[in-house]
Amino acid sequence: MSSFGDRLKEVRGELTQAEFADILGIPQVTLGNYERGRNEPRFEFIEKVCSRFEINVEWLLFGTGNRRGGPAGTAKPTCDVDLIMIPMVEARLSAGPGSLETSGECERSYAFRSDFLHRKGNPDDMVLMRVEGDSMQPEIMHNDVVLIDRSKTQIRLGRIFAVGFEEAIYLKRIDMLPGKIVLKSANPAYPPVELDIREQQGDSFRVIGQVLWSGREYV
Image (cartoon, rainbow, N blue to C red):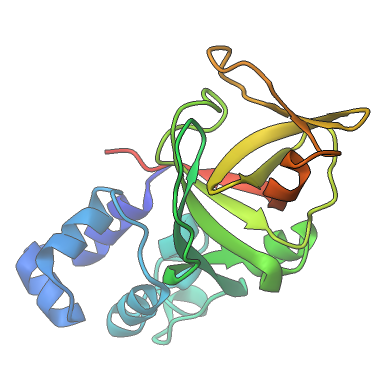
């Protein structure tokens, strides 16, 4: 199945990257990153491509339906799915050792299918964050993007959560012992960490939200 970048190049056709980028009002390097799959496209860009070149949004995003906008190739673009924009926050999660600041400022937003998000929870409580570190490999790799539901803070044993401890943020599976929280990594090189929540450590520990989905870019 073709990738988003392949379909974007198909829309570009015989136009050069410079010509295509100029039509869409973006830098050529940005277009190149979209075509190579290095960056996720902004929804405003997708809308502009579909409007300018009469392309079906669903075909461009997912490779399904007709390429041309509208039924049976009519002139106007259409989208048969509802999309919701989820913000990518500035903070980077740590899936290994280290301390990271978490300003929570929004960098950009990415489109997800509405039906998918509503099956998982309330989209208003969801954010995307980028992972740093290798402690959850091979399940979640360094530089992956994860979707987090910040309303899901009740511990569910064995599920992956974004957790804060002191000034650091980590992705971990959570188990519980009497009076203790156990943070477990997928990578066997990282031993479990036990936190005594009855003592001072309990004030430094917080559950930020449950991980619902992860995505990966290839270069």
